[in-house]
Every structure is written in C-alpha cells, then in structure tokens.
Length: 213
Image (cartoon, rainbow, N blue to C red; front, top):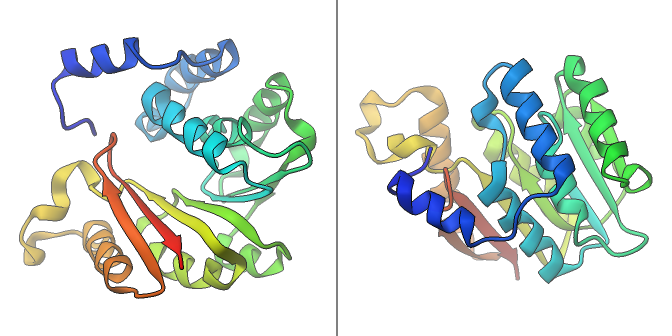
C-alpha cells in the first residue's frame, strides 16, 4: 500500500505522534488473529485521521467500514464532548473485538456500532454529519457518496480511503478489475462534482477528501 521507501516510512512514523497503547494492542491482535490485516489503518494513517478529527472537532461522524475498530477509535480523538461516531460493518464476527477495544479506549459512550448492509442502514441514521469516512466495499463507493451527501452539513467532509488501490488505478481500463474501475470512477465523480472541492492525498493507499460547498 505504501508508495514511498520503507526507510522513509519509518522516518515519518518515528517523527509523528505515537499511537496509544490501546491502538498498539489492537494493531498487534489484528495482525495476529484477523484475515487481511493490511486493511487496518495503522500508525501513520491513524494519526492523520486523529489530526483531521482534532482539526474539525466533529459532533457527528459516520464511518462506513469498521473492520477491527482502529480508525473508529482515531476518529473519536477529536470528537466534541457530546459527539458521536456511527460506524457500520457487515462482518458480525469482528463485533466482539471491536466492542472490547472501544471500551478499552474509554469511548464506548460516544460510539454507536451497526452490523449489516450499509446501503440499508445509512438511510435509517437520522443525523447530520460533519465527517463521513468511506472505507468499505470499493464497488459501492459512488453509491455511498450519493447516499450520504444530503446528510453532510455544508462545510462538512466526505473522505474515502484506498482510492489509489496499490497503484492499480493508473493501469489500462480494459485490464482493471471491478474494484479498481469503481475507484477510478469514484475519483472522477468527486473531481467533477461542482458541489464539493477535493484533494487526493497519497497517504498510505490514498485518501480522497471532499469538502461540501
């Protein structure tokens, strides 16, 4: 996922705020026990999420794709005192692990977890969001964007992870798999949408940040 030299990644991580002990344990357990641990946000991206959260100080955050809860915990670090994070995942098998680490992080009262199909769940959440973080099935990124847009306040953010997809997005269209093609389409969709301003950061596997105008 990383596009820069490993030694430079180490330098960057060594000169960025360290992750908490809870996040370190969650990182280790994910890599030891869970399939596809590279889906975890990890140290650098987690600190970026935390910094964004502390800059925005959101009241309401929607996360589409919980996985083991690492990024969810990072988003709570900048939440307003009475703010909430709503996080959705389709994998019920990870829920106990997610709940355990959310409680260990001391943010249980601020996190609402949902298990099921995000396309069905999103319309049932009656909140206006400061931030939406999309990190789920890539084929539905554009659909998620359309579903959440009216639920994001003016000046709010829709942030999508993995939009560089290990560099595969710059290949020939006819050679792309469905996930890669969907991510290319998503990036084009956001870039051409006059209702937002956007920037694509090459952080880890790519973060597309769109701010609603």
